[in-house]
Picture 1 (cartoon, rainbow, N blue to C red):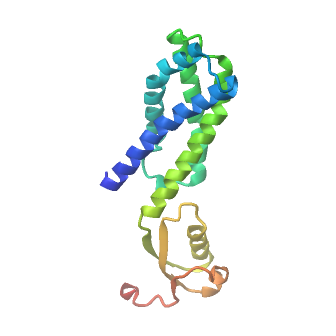
Picture 2: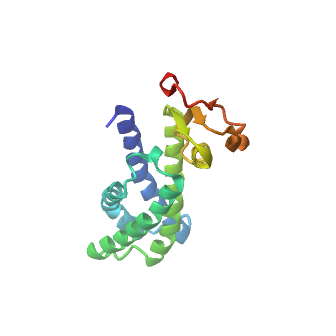
Picture 3: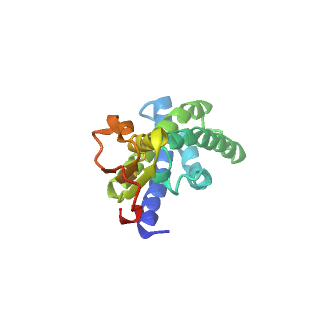
Length: 196
C-alpha cells in the first residue's frame, strides 16, 4: 500500500468512526431535542467502542477502504445502504446483549437515514479530495468504429475521472463529433503505432 493511500485511508477510518457516532448522536437530538436524558446518553456512550470497531470492520468487509477512485460513485452509494442497515441492527443487538434498555427504539429508526446521509456525504467528500490530490493516468485509445467512440464517451463522462485521454487513434473521426470539448490528439493512421 502506498504512503498516500495509507494516509487517506487513515483519515477515512477516523472520519468514519467520528461520523458514525455523530449520526447516532444526531438521532438522539432529533428524538429528544436539545436535552438528551442522562440515562439514554450514558447507554449510548457505553456502546461507542462496539459500534466504532464494528463499523470499521464492516466497511472494510464492503471494500470501502481500497481502490475508491476505481469505483463508480453510485456503487459506493449503494454499498452504504446495506452497511448502514447492518450497523443499526448490530447496535440493536449489542443494546439487547448489554442490557442497555435506556437506548430508545425510536432512535434506531431515526439513526438509519441520518447515518446513511452522513456517511454518503463524508465518503463523497473524501473521494473528491482524493481526486484533487491524485494524478490522473494518461491513456491512449486505439480502436475502430462506433465501439471505440462509445468507450471514449464513457471515459469522458465517467464519474471517477481518473483518466486523461492523451491520444485517440480511430479509423473514422466522424464518430467523435460530439466530443469537441475534450482535448486529445486525434490520429487516423494505424501505421507506425509504436511511434505514437
